[in-house]
Amino acid sequence: MLWLVLVWIDRRLPFKENQLGGRILAHLPVSVALTIVHFYVLMVMRALLGLSAWSMVTSFSPVAALQGLLWSWLVYWAIFGARQTFRYYEHYLASELRLERMERSFSGSPQEFVTSGTLRGVPDFLKSAGSSESLRGV
Image (cartoon, rainbow, N blue to C red; front, top):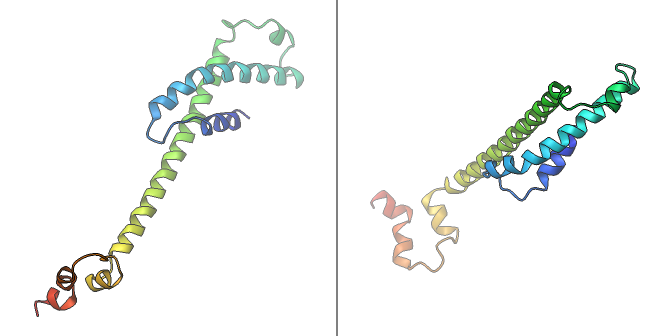
């Protein structure tokens, strides 16, 4: 449940992929709030399942629950790190795909480049300089 909220919040942040510092600073107050909410929900669920007493929920002491809160906070940041790793991987794959498409579009022969219409508006003597006869030295 925590990761769904984290992803929902992360998608609405106005930061680009390369603005990791701003993204971390934006998540810092959110992480504290969500960690406390997550810890309370976890304590209530444990009480509902009979794994702990209801008195643990009603007499909540932040000092006594520090270990659980720190653990929940660590889980939040582990999810954040996994999410950022996945975002970086997607960005890397998209970059590789763009690079491959560019390489494929520039891998044609010079004659294809001249006749493809990409040299519109270029003087004829420059177009003939790129022809296959002038490239072969004929």
